[in-house]
Amino acid sequence: MERTSNLQNRVLENGVSGWINGLIGVVIFSGSLPATRVAVAEFDPVFLTVARATIAALLAVGLLLLFREKRPARQQLLPLAIVALGVVLGFPLLTALALQYVTSAHSIVFVGLLPLATAVFGVVRGGERPRPVFWFFSILGSLLVVGFALAQGLSASPQGDILMLLAILACGLGYAEGAKLSRTLGGWQVICWALVLALPVMAALTWWRMPASFSTISTPAWFSLGYVSLFSMLIGFVFWYRGLAQGGIAAVGQLQLLQPFFGLALAATLLHEHVSIGMLGVTVAVIACVAGAKKFAR
Image (cartoon, rainbow, N blue to C red; front, side, top):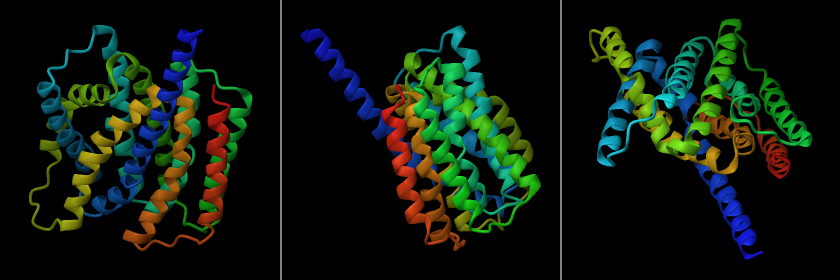
């Protein structure tokens, strides 16, 4: 009886920790698209993608050496490659390309679909089986986010929309694969090894795509490159993958429903992009959907 009680307490503690870590990750990721929007105005999108990955990978090498982490097992290399393709290359590159056609506020619309994509890949790749009511709250929350953003009358671009949709699919797969791998390899180790795996290609492309001169690059663009390299590409994933592994991919993934609102607030504050005051009411409704999804996730 006591053993069962202790087990239940540990599960509860892991669940709470998972949601806390997940929320920290979401807050960090919320600045990614606005920062990318600033950076891509002055950096080539491909250079921005490979440069941020290279910078983060060099930091990852330092962390792995500092803590003397063991190399991943052979069977872990393919999942790490999927993580690298999804979140190190796929999502950053596709969003950087998309942000040449659409505003960061418009791109954030698609982030509302990311929790649903993560949940689907969590079922396919992570073996999770949420209750049917979970899908109701997940889809409702996604529709609320997308409907709210579209109601703002944001300008659309077919090229930008297709690129953002592909980015969401790549990111959802990378999130689910990384969370599954985190259960055995560790949260921060997953993103670090994925970055290291991609480093040779990313470093070579960085050298190849490097502009002839950086003299025209402004301070905000440099700060944006630093943010997406350090926070979006590394630190955010430390919290995010740990949260997904602790609290469940499908469940904690629903916290991403809040990311568009954090991102839209940043877009309005830093980039002076128009965001309706109706954000508050929709945010409350989305939080209710997150709570409902959490309750029926297992």
